[in-house]
Image 1 (cartoon, one colour):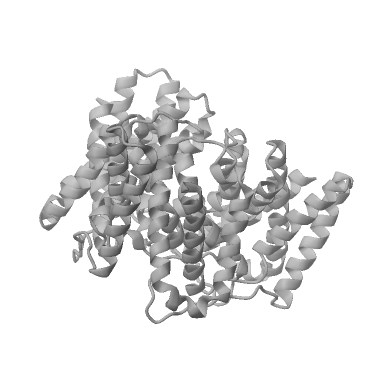
Image 2 (cartoon, one colour):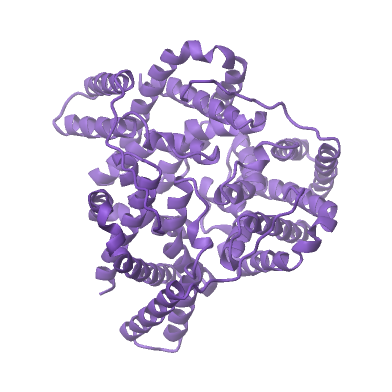
Length: 206
Length: 206
Length: 206
């Protein structure tokens, strides 16, 4: 089941990448590249961070076609994207959670210590969006708006805790999705966010 | 012969990096670093993506000196660079093609599947320019203007097809350069470009 | 002793990352991530460049807590940071030197050639700051202002030369810190900087 959600997840992420590329007036190739990197960049950064070669998607070319296809399809349906706004946010949240759990499992399989497992989960969850924003020359959104990266952290911690307590894997995933989705969607609905640090010295070079 | 073209290619890329650094008023060190990364960054990203360690240039220090030297020399001849504009575009196009073919061959040597071989070629061709633009805080040019990244894609596909069909390696390279250069230069001359995706919603957070 | 200086160094770098994140109004999570990447990103890029897996900090979780803690603490004392300005610059300079020497030693331990050892030292010294600036969407400061990256280069060259000449390791480090700190602080005091390359053609696409 995680595989299906993963496929939905990379599709949703690819679409978010394509929209960001469209805001920068990129061409077909740029849209494809940003879609690909947004969807598979988180896992790529995780695999590099963990020294886990070959990198996941290099062994699964269909993931490449799927993300590029989703990116290009987004160009066609861009005009009606605002109507799909809510659906899109739900898919994106599911993707965040699926990415986080998958990232934790990759690190667990490589016998990394728990703090690194958590970081592998978060990295998989949020770095696609960070790469997207860096390549589109804007400050990473995931570090500024409603609870997003912190949902990834929370899901990782809860998933690992329940796993440690011996909960059945499938049940654990169900609980993770339920909790993660609830919080993420509530955060969007009521604009929950972490405290923001605003620093504006007049003359200070950090 | 590919080696000579490679040396010309990294020189041309280093110069393009130095000019971009100059637009950001960087110091000597910044110019050197950006020149180096523009020239050798594509191969670096490719080697990391393929898990191909040690990374190419770490075994060939002269490449480091050449790219930094080319970057610093560019500062001296910046005033006459506009006169060399056309020569520079030809060298840059040759570099793009040489990088693409080299990248494909590295991946072929590591037994990656064909889609990954194509991506390794394109990555080698365009990621130096992408790193340059990210470090110079601008939206990657290669994803926005005249056919560039797509020339890399086309060269990779044609090269691999002819290789599969059993064409002699040297002849194949000659054909790749002829076709790639023609298209790239025609694209510059007549402003050929891919369709652009412009997305400007009034209120939509992707 | 280098370990203690290293701990001070990553703390100082984490604080500089937190301040940069604050200028972009990032949330708690963003501040933590940028603090972590500024402090440990240089070593991460070095380890990837050298193919040195597992990456250093993945084996030392306390470094993660220290840098994130330092980043969050910075939010609390941000108002008095300007009073600590000078202390901060000294710590930052010590960090630059410690990072450089550590980076050289990692590459030496992997039997890389001297030019790559120098680049590993500089990469460790300056890439944390470069990642910070890329993620905060600004042109890397270390490539534009008073001697900074070049202090790292100088320290690396001097350290390796004295090492080659057979100087005692501890004495060598002392000399490196004395020379590096003097030059960096003098550069700040009297605004020493490298020549800047300013390139502003009217119509030229590099």
